[in-house]
Image (cartoon, rainbow, N blue to C red; front, side, top):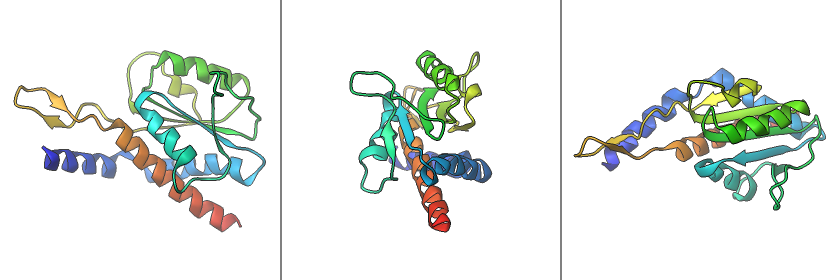
Length: 174
């Protein structure tokens, strides 16, 4: 099972991210860091792994902050700020409400989702949407089910790719 999972995961990593879109996403977030802004991050459910890495990881970008305060209120944002939002589904109702608040403030949003679904998409209002395109769990079982849904792994991989691109952009800027 491990070899199947690894092979399938590697395939997703190799085929999911568009180089040009990733560069655009890195530039969008970098704008906050070269100016007076900050990057605010919120990952819902398993995507909170990216929030933890961005805020507390060994290698992190400067001026990355949580989008929500301890009491659950959204922080006050400035137009120079950027927001990175992550969720499993692109039609998540909570994310729709968050995006509406950010839109009212004209805050640029980078969206990352693992599944693109039908209906109203919160990602439609994001400046850039990175769809990880995880349709199913990766490993078939003897009963015909599938297990091993790698949404958070792919989101972390995507975050690290963005981190590397942003680091490169910032080094050229200095």
